[in-house]
Structure formats: C-alpha cells, structure tokens
Image (cartoon, rainbow, N blue to C red; front, side, top):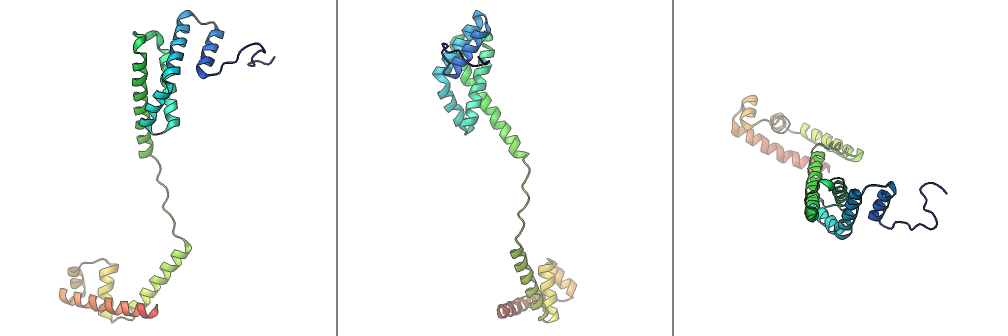
Length: 196
C-alpha cells in the first residue's frame, strides 16, 4: 500500500479538526497535547463560523477572514499549555481574531500607500491628430488678426501674462490691453466658425 493512503478498514477523517487530531494521535503525543487537541477541536467545531463572520466584518474579505481565524486557532493550539484559564479560551480567540484583523488592515494601508502609480493613459492617435488640427487652425486664425490684437492674445493665453504685464510689454495702457484682447477674441471666434 502507498504511503499516506488509508488502509481498507481504517475510517478516514472527515473534517480539518479530525484530521489534526488523527495526525497527533498517530505521532504518539503525550496526554497534555491530546487535551489541547480535543479542546481546540471542540472550540473549532462550535465557534469557527462565528469567528469567521467577525473577521469578515472587520477585514471585508471572507478568504482573508478565514486565514485570520485559522491563524488564531493555530496560535491557540501552540500556546494551549500557557493558557491559565481554559474557560476563557473563546475570549482569547476573539481577541486574537480582532488583533490579527487589525494587522491585516494596517498591512493593507501600507501596501496601498506604497503601491506603484499606474502610468498615465496615452492619448490615442486620433486625439493627437484632432489636437494638431485644432492647434494649426488656431495658429492660422491668429495670423489673420491685426498685429496688436495677435500680440495681446499670445501674451495673455500662451505666455500667461497678466494685463499689467502685457501693458508694460506692449507699452500700452491696461484699458488698451482689454480692448485689443476682446476684439481679438471676437475676430478669432468668427474666423474659426467660418473655417469649421
């Protein structure tokens, strides 16, 4: 018979806890270990689902909640001899589940904070062509404006200068800057509407 396969007459364990207890018995552990196995198996059978529900409410993920609860049971089993009052084992388990859930949430925050940012979306070739066409249409329309109006628009919208800076650069009053800019915008709009 192959190793690890049950004999024909042996009953196969049907749950995780029965599997754990069967493995410990097969290894010939002492009475204290058997007591821990039985106690943890009873707690597991009675409270596993409620502890998973508790963890799932905290971590918002059933798979992670199951891992948290299983880790709490493993830790309890390993530390059963150190447990002073076995009647408080369920309380210990609940606190362990809450603490482990907090650790999961803290870990998620760190991972989210340090996650690499995705590269920016590249514009499609079509959008690039449209932008190039619009830019060339605006430049062509700018060329039809009188020189002072064109200067006022370019300084205002391409150089991003204030009215005072434009007035100083063009050596005209701020009122004249406003007038040139307004007339240029009207003329530019009309040219662009005509060209489509």
